[in-house]
Length: 275
Image (spheres, helix red, strand yellow):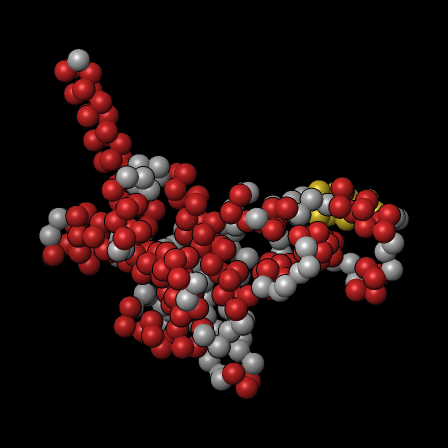
């Protein structure tokens, strides 16, 4: 956060995606979908959001004050989210309720920050939809990505119970995806886009943390098809597929990273001996 003194008022201004509020995130993603005459005009709109300046006050700013704000409040990280610290905090823990004319439905809850409660099976589907959306810009792929991550509350949800496993959502079931995707399709695009930015940010963090997993053959398989091929190799047999798919994503990636790192170290040691 940045302390910005402007006029007689001191503003606490976000300087990274993870410092935004839920409201600010949705306002920013809505701006991403609008046409602006220039990057400067878009940046000024971003500044108004993160400063929380009322419209009537913003309209009264003169040219000198606007230039001063451009120096005081950097917002390039909002215009180019892929080039800066990614969004990994869960700022959208549940999807907004649909309006009455869009159709009634239950509240859908999302994963925790940094994919903390994602299963490997869930990741297989989510990542396939994410990569397809990036390749095709097809809104239905975005709908499916959101429908994979966001689900109704599980029966008997009790966060203080001794057996609470850390996930508020009902267990992932690929057979319910199409019905949820039809519900998600009614949401405004900027809400789904916010989920996509969060997913991309968490995935980028995984790429840094598990560098052996997200390089080479595994990444090529994911881009060409999905992580399902990786699942079959990991399971080592049909009888273990469900057990492996149900594991926490971070547990699976940690083990994959360890095995791949050791394999590379053995290969390097073998090359050294041969030379």
